[in-house]
Length: 115
Image (tube, rainbow, N blue to C red; front, side, top):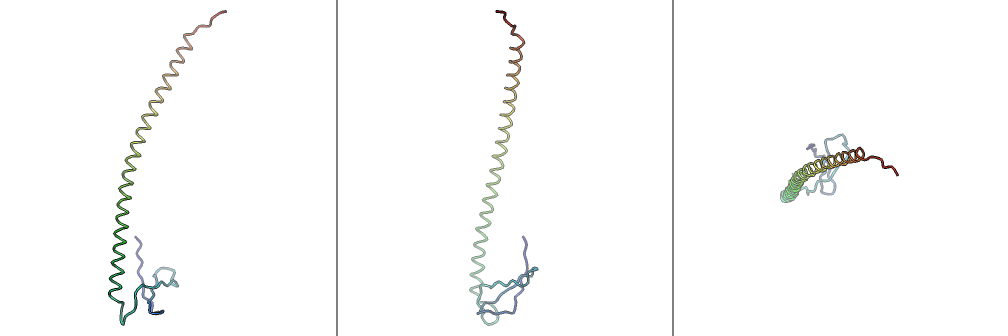
């Protein structure tokens, strides 16, 4: 996971503080979703924000776990299908060999008839 630190920029636009990513794009400002209250942010807003973030993170983690279980199940099914396919191909090869053998026997045993 790529975590980039953020630097608070001393820019106040309509009661919203903005932050800037410490990446190469230093001109990109994104507003923070908190109202400035004296020295800092409104505590309730911050707590609510992180509660929502935590809930979303839990949903994403549950989705990830469900997808991982589904991938495991599908991989097992794929292995089963591949094994079944290999047995069908082997059976087909045996049948083709038998047909060729019988065709060769029939071709060698037949004598031409005279009219």
